[in-house]
Amino acid sequence: MTLKNAIAGEEYVIRQIHTDDEELNAFLFSLGCYSGEKITVVSHLKNSCVVSIKDARYNIDHQLASAIVV
Image 1 (cartoon, rainbow, N blue to C red):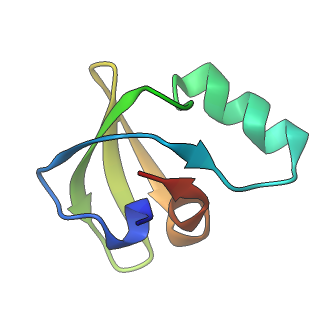
Image 2 (tube, one colour; image 1 turned 30 degrees about the horizontal axis):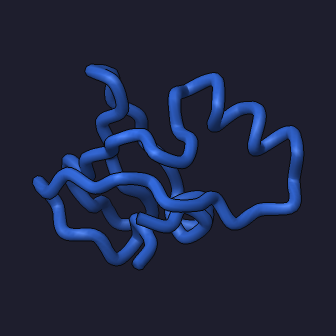
């Protein structure tokens, strides 16, 4: 399941990031978004979702949320 389909308020563990873009992988890693890390979907918005990683909240678009497998 991807973050786009995740239930708001539930805590998940990131299993994999599906992207071939090394720059995007580096960006996600700098946010603390990598395999084995816990992530919580705070809410789903129209074209994005709010996630919590390591006590920080980020707004990510649905395309990026679809690349994060939990």
